[in-house]
Structure formats: structure tokens, C-alpha cells
Length: 161
Image (cartoon, rainbow, N blue to C red; front, side, top):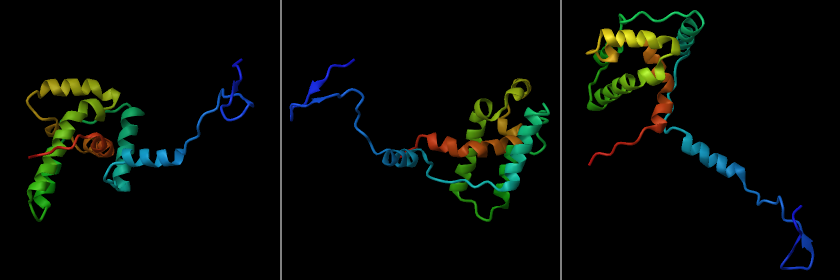
């Protein structure tokens, strides 16, 4: 048991054990939420969300894997997008290059399900000189968009001087 202490203001004894200063948690939560929230929002149509769910179920429940190399690769999808755009500015091309870079670097660590790892090792060994965007297709590309908000919230800003 903790000894009772005398207050400096009065002769009464006070038990100070277990007393903590209260803090306004609502202010901290709001501040933390704003700091963790990405600066942008990416809306994904319900049809694409449905494709992601179907993809997850076929791999994790039915134990199937996507046939690789894909007939329509990530590079094909992005090139088709560029071709159908009315204007070609540098920002769009940089964004496409950034998406390819994110995909190539995050596929093995973030976008593959555990049951796809062996297939990745085999396909990567069969095509060592190919970019992953030239092997994988829509299913894996959609997974990137499912994680792009999280990735962007942790990305370091680039400054060019």
C-alpha cells in the first residue's frame, strides 16, 4: 500500500496513487486520422471489386492459379490506355511508368497470394529478362489498385531541384 502524502496547500492527506491527468482523446484521434489518411481517394467500380473477389476466391478457395504469361499483360493494358487517350502529356506517361515500377517492385512482396509463390518462382526463372508487367495481367494489376492507396500514403515525396 502506498503511503499517504500531504498536500502542499492543506493539511489533508491525499492518495495520489492511480490518478492520471485526463486528456482529450477526440482531438488526438482526429489529428492521427488526418495524418494517416492519404491525400487522395481512388474509387474502384463495383465490377472491378467483383473481379478482385472472384480472383481471391478462385485462388484461395478453389486452389487455382492464373495462367501465365497472360494474353493481355499489364503493359498491353497501359499501352492500350495510352493509345485511346486524346492527349499525350508527360504527366500521363510518367504516371504509367510509375505504375509499372510499383507493379514490378510490389508483385512478389505484396500482390501475390501464398499459393502463387511457386508459380512466380517458375515463371520468373523461365523469363528472367522480361519485366513482370510483360508477364502478368489484369488480375494482378487490379490487386495493385487495391493497395495503391496504402502504398501512396507511405511513399516518400520526390523533390527535383
